[in-house]
Amino acid sequence: MVEIGEEMPKVKLVDTEFNEVSIPGDASGKPVVVAFFPGAFTSVCTKEMCTFRDSMAQFNSVNAKLYAVSVDGPFANKVFRDTNKLNFPILSDYNREAVEKFDVALNDFAKLKGYTAAKRAVFVADAKGVVKYRWVSNDPTVEPDYAEINKALQEIQ
Image (tube, rainbow, N blue to C red; front, side, top):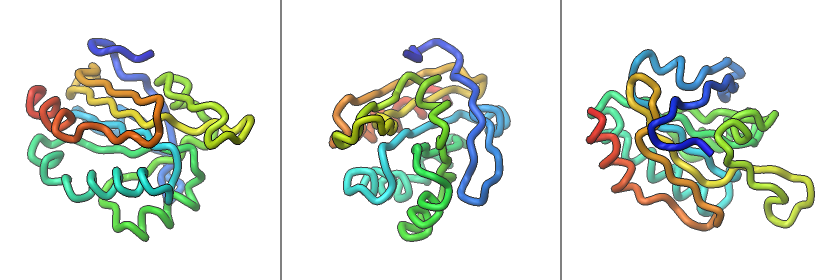
């Protein structure tokens, strides 16, 4: 499990345009928020991502980079992003590298034996890539505390 005070794991994922994105490397010395979500178009995931969309001013005020990550392919993520007018990168962890490195794999998701999704989780790292906030839920129906995420961002400014 990635703990507070540790360096954020380095992963390479693809965005909705099939561009490779390195986390936290592509944030160029900015604070980074990585929000894992189980699946595009599920009700709680849609609500969570739209809440982040509507809160981008908070991320921008501290010059933070937000990345959302799911195991869905870039095709589904693109439609999800466009449908919900999401204004931050949605990254595909189709090979489950990130969910393993961050230790947020949700095995047998939705009672589908062998299907691994991402647990709902949020990691906040400072500009040096050190994790300052971590929240992981074993219950995919539970949303993060958005005020806590904002507080963590304000504290690392």
